[in-house]
Length: 246
Image (cartoon, rainbow, N blue to C red; front, top):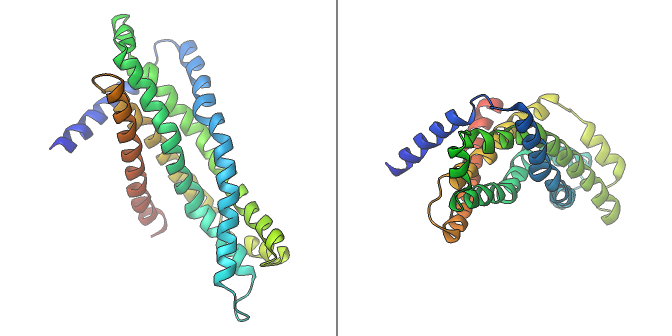
């Protein structure tokens, strides 16, 4: 029953979030600030992880197809499919859930325990709309760009790994990447990214907004936010894969 209570409270929160902003100039300023905090500051870690994990996927694939009867271009083909379908949209979203989710939950939770949110309510401001809606719009706009970057760097990381290790030829890898390319797979990955971006913005905001107590409770809320965001992403990944690819 406690889970049902939190689910209902979460959707009630969303109803308040999606009301029309009182001042578009304020919303625009908050939106661009969230683009920087939630998006641009995540570029480095996304680029770093994407590049090296793409290389690891390519090397492991090369080691597993080390047979004269298996064409080497399958390394590029398998790396491309792995990166586009699962690694970029799902694995990167879990990484962002840890980095961004903890930031959102702790920042809003700190505002709650220091009574800044109460001050906003006293001034007649819809605090949920003011604090959460710019975060949702920023993640929905920017995270698809991050995932496209992760796809490119993951595939390129596999190419560089082939050059450095000599496990496979670059010509075979490029041919495998180009082989049987289906644009729907990219569309599928971006649809998942939009759903995950919404989850990353709203679940940590829920945990931070309704926290009670002091700084210790804010830390616990941040941990719970990351855990539950990751769990929901994994569950939604299963259902979205069944609906879009099944």
